[in-house]
Amino acid sequence: MKQILQSATINTWISIGVRIGGLALLLPIVLTHLDLNQVLIWQLQSSIMVMMLWIDFGITPTFSRFIAVARGGGSLQELQQTVKHQIRPKGAPDIASAPLNLDSMVSTSGRVYLIMALVGTLLIALIGTLVMMGPVTTLSNPNEGWQAWMLTLVAVPFASMNGYNASVLVGCDRIARLRQIESVIGLLQIFSTCLVVIFTANLVWIAASYTFWTIVSFAVNSRYRKIVLHDQKESEAIEQQPKWNPELFRVAWAAGWRSGIGVLFSTGIIQGSGMVMPQIASVEVSAAYLLTLRLVTIASQMSQAPFYSRLPTMAKVNAEGNRVELIKLAKKGLNLSFWTMTAGIFAILFIFPQVLLLIDGSVQMTSPMLSLMLSLAFFAERYGGMHMQLYTLSNQVIWHRINGFTGIFILLAFALLWPFAGPHSMPLAMLAGYGFYLCPLVSHKSLAFIGQERWRFERETSLGPIIALLALSVLHLLLAWQPL
Image (cartoon, rainbow, N blue to C red; front, side, top):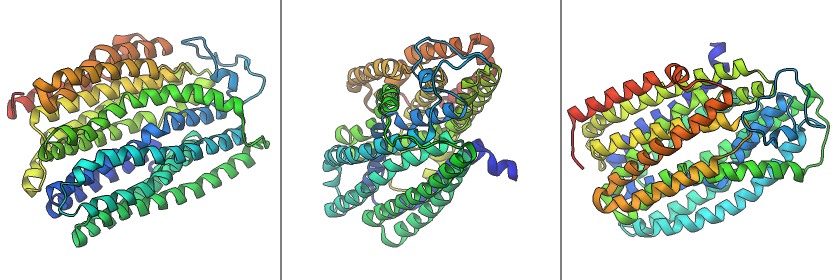
């Protein structure tokens, strides 16, 4: 039990499991108590809130990595290194004049997040309102939709600043406790929202429930962050530094904006398709697409836990020059992540459609072919995304170039395919962009960085899950084939 409570991976799984279980509990209630147009607005607001990832612009993983490197004895100059595929040998002298200072780093990142929260709220208010204008008019009471949207906007700055809390806690390797807090608050949010839907069937009260628990989450994590930083300073005798370090900000921004562009052209495009769909497709098609997109996104998030929870440790051992431990952690994390994604895809293809038919709600899944293509596209995106994170440990941030080109390719392919393939055009475009460009290129770079031969590495990480995924795909097509 102690190992479970202290395991970052298990607690991350529990946190995401709460979201999945919550969705499994909430979704049937929503689909049987809200009409089709209300369900579309509910899902659309959730998709718009994913824009928080764009506003973060890569700063959260960047500062988390900086803190982890500092804990491993790293320095600012190491983060500025320009030599590719370099791991500092164990015992080699530090090339920097001084180690990274935790106090200065945290205070600098806090000011950055405050600016992002203000600017981000304005951007989401503008873009989100434009996206909502059409779907809100389909409601029997449009005021209900606009009031719900206003309440949703209240949560945006708190959700943004919660990224600051998360970056500090992840960098200080407090992932397990962070996920425990998320799990408890997530359960409370789900149960309260279920009660609101049952007794009110009103979008305003649903939005109020989500906003309330977002503010609670921010308050609790802020308190825990202060405790962790206080303990860290006492145990390591960290000296006080200026509250603003312009050099540290320049290095963080140099890495962060590249990561941000990468997120914009990867997650941004995927989730953005959910906001575009209501503008170009019918309410029925849009609601079904958003539902399937939400389910696949949750499966993708759950698959990240085994690998992403190990990133702070991987950054630490990389800074220490421990290549053997880095490779061991990477293999184990990737293999568990791929198997988790495969299990999630199995549930999406074979279990969720039957559940939705059983409850006979206002929205059903998309066609079996679209569900399959979206699932395969997300698997490819996760493969490329995790190899990108592994290569980023070299402090060579290439997200902006690789994901930027991939994103442009996906957008062009989507525009060309839409007249012929309709809603199927997005997953088709994603499969082409990820499968033929991003995945082979990024995995080549990450394997070169850690010095591993491809076939042996893939045999221990991705081969089994890929074979299982292909078998599931064939079975799915045999049981429920629908041509485009």
